[in-house]
Length: 147
Length: 112
Image 1 (cartoon, rainbow over the protein chains, first blue to last red):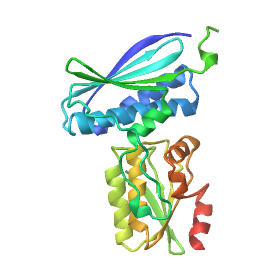
Image 2 (cartoon, chains in turn green, yellow; image 1 turned 90 degrees about the vertical axis):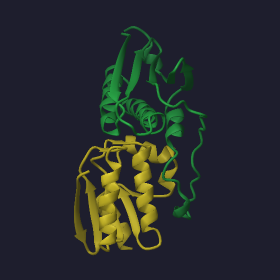
Image 3 (cartoon, rainbow over the protein chains, first blue to last red; image 1 turned 90 degrees about the horizontal axis):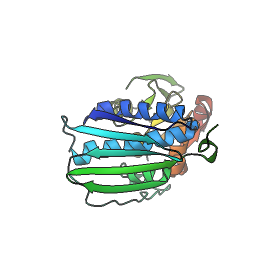
């Protein structure tokens, strides 16, 4: 299969995140991943970029958010990079679901859980003054061999 | 966020016209749904069949709507595509929301 690297950059505005999402979905569809797998990759990266804008940059525009997409032999890797406030912790937890009492349902806090569930590897690193969240999605076995 | 709506037998049927319910669109979605509730519509069938993408912000907006209606009305979400449904299942919100395959199913559930 063909491999390669592409870097996508948007300004730190939630209004622009759909551009990253649609580009990720198109790249995944071209590999080709299934519709479900492409969706999982798209939503995972969108969650990561939303987090950068909301938490690392405090919803302030004017900062670059970079997504490096690497299509490798056996996996596709997304590195979401920023120069904002570093994460203090990575708490991956699904908010409690109490079907009998909807008032207890959380309206936020599912993003990291979704990222972890829909990818095969999730890692957070500090690289100098840069924050890098790496998400790896393994490709199906049939797509790891040359045709 | 563009919404289409109609009222059938006291049931408000709302159809999301756009393809994405995400961090960009949730504010206007919440605002418009709150206007419906304030206007007195408390039994709502929400047709999300055009939605191709929902993220955790979109799910959060739906949770907020469910909470707003809880105790004073009812909400049925219908028409979710498989990919969108996978988000509900992953987060176990499919156990919380009343989900129907189509608008007629949603209307029937709300008419009971």
